[in-house]
Length: 177
Image (tube, rainbow, N blue to C red; front, side, top):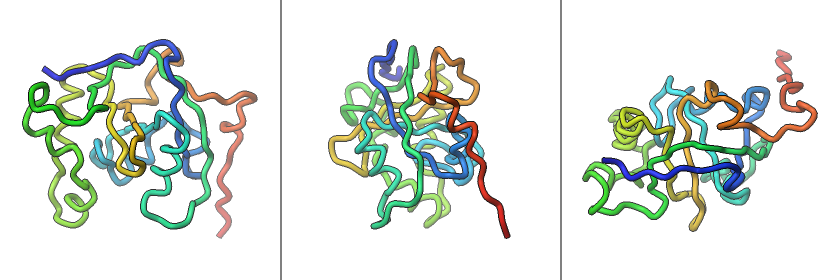
């Protein structure tokens, strides 16, 4: 059994810095689907959020010394059931495979051509009927992230972006040659 937690009505706002290409569709999770992510294979939609704005900025920046253009947004999450890795791996509560949740998925996938164990963890979460995973940030010590699968199909009462005036929907990418 996978230990889980539920994020209730506006328990905590979440944050994300969105790349310009995806700013017009902030709930899509398609940016992560384009190449894959820590807990999602290429082609699998996943929306990665942070529990505070500093972690969101660190996650967006990753190991780049410069901050790329992006739009920081607040998201509200309600009634999402998550596998709870926020306190780290506990061998008394988690299957052994989950001990590898901190592995660098990019090294495994892009460097070795091997599917990282975190993708199999996501398979377990989806098979258990959970909506995603809450986990410690590797980009900012003490930060916490969550990933929500199938984010674009969630009703607004479960997941919404704070966008007064529909400014994100008005964003169009300049495609000049």
